[in-house]
Image (cartoon, rainbow, N blue to C red; front, side, top):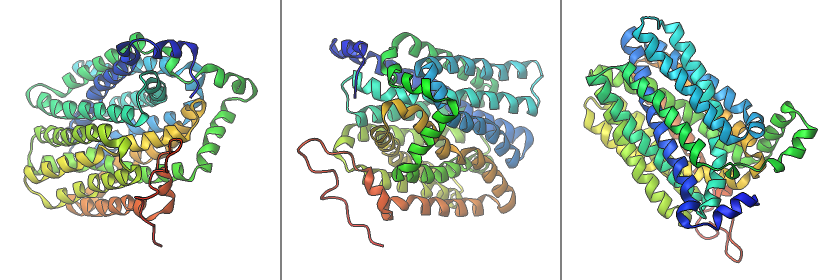
Amino acid sequence: MTESPTATRTVTATSPRRRRGLWAFLASEVVSVTGTRMSMVVVPWFVLITTGSAALTGLVAFAETLPYVVVLGLGGPLVDRWGARRVAVGSDLAAAVLVGAVPLLHLTGRLPLGVLVALVALAGAVRGLGSATYVLMPGLAEQARMPIERATGLHDGMNRVAGMVGLPLAGVLMTVWSAPAVLLIDAGSFLVAGLLIAVFVDRSVQPRADETAEHEEKVGYVAELREGVAFLRRDRLLVAIALMVLVTNLLDQAYSVVLVPVWVRDELGSPLGLGLIGGVFGIGAVTGSALFAWLGPRLPRRRSFAWGFLVAGAPRFAVLALAVTLPPVLAVSLLAGLGVGAINPALSSTEYERVPRHLQARVLGALGALAWAGIPLGGLVGGLAVDTLGLTASAVVLGAVYLVATLSPFVMPVWREMARPPAAGTEPEGAEVLEPVRA
């Protein structure tokens, strides 16, 4: 990759200075994601308990995630023009204001369901634009002289740490304190995350402006969007990734915002169970991410990804259909967390390698929007399924669909392109270890 003069100066500095930006970025992710994971538990539980309706719980989740997906898909050219670092900081500050408004309005008695829906929708929109931080990762890894798989493994692992801390903490706080208090902490986390990026992450790690400036003089916003979509459509592997993750994201959303809260309400009767399930999953995910960050560069990428997804997906639905006590759910959650640790680092490394730096905001934005398109529907599908079929039948049906989706990397030849590019003078990854795909 081509480096700016500023980036070159940073790389030749001492090792702690080279990695300061990466560690600050990872710390900002931990702070922000911890607060977000807490609100992901609080809001569905708050709606479920106050309304008693799984369908309304799914509707609120839909209202938050739909704007996120729309802005994620349409915001790539804006990120290129304004700069990923500036967008990340601005979106964090805006999210702090919007999330903080929820508990403040609640304290004054001015938070009807419609206002809550509007606030979470606006927060989802600014967070969708703020997700542009992913285009900073290649530059941060390059600056730190770290393999991209190790950097993305650390990134995923730190996100898993945030989930491990945020979910059980939310359950404890809701048990001994209140849901609005959790949302105040979430608002504060966005402020801290924005400040960390503003102070410690250098502008040089974002895609270089001179790589896109000439292009931007010749074409407009719509043309830039089309360029990103066109690049995505030409890459069969990226399309396969987007379609598979679209389905699994839909089902994961149904699981997390509807099926688990309903199971906890019916079998346990306490929000503490939500935190325990999420926390144990987080422990497994942190462990899995740490293992992949260490071993990932030496493991066959496709196999790691495929087996990780298979373990992390359908078993969680099966245990909800069968279990009436907490320990089996916790055991399966731990195993699923271990599997999920290999998923995001493998996906991110593949995407960064296949998309040129100056196109990453718009191409990966389009890919992310397609992959995330199932999330808004997930809450609706989960809520309607539970209200119509009941929890057990819904878990069986949705888990079966998840299983079918996660078998595709084992049987579809396009997934063999996931192998990392060979270094000069070496055999391509998988030349000896990838098994032939039978029709």
